[in-house]
Image (cartoon, rainbow, N blue to C red; front, side, top):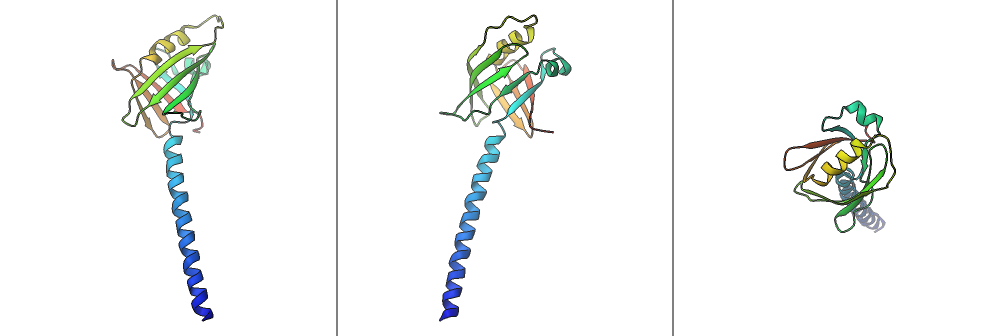
Length: 151
């Protein structure tokens, strides 16, 4: 009788253990999928700007805020002002950038910031491949980013 009881107890415990493992596995997959876009991204390629120019300006966007109603409130920095925007990233690779604004500091060289702000509003598609994010508009213009947390 004791052997049967121990066997049943072990079987129940094993079932609970397997069930917990399946829940953790699913949670991990969802987190990995979300973490692909919810990052800080360093701008590495944009228009005629060299990579060294973009690095020197610390050009980046931050998409780490939690999404609300499918929209992420993001920030950007292009060397002078803090910029802010709302992005809506769809599963089909479409993106809508809206509510773009910035602080109003007057800096000596604001060309990158102005060019970025104008082009960023027109981005319509996105693609994440590994640690790389690409935004494109309907005319084929691109912005390429690399994840800041990637070594």
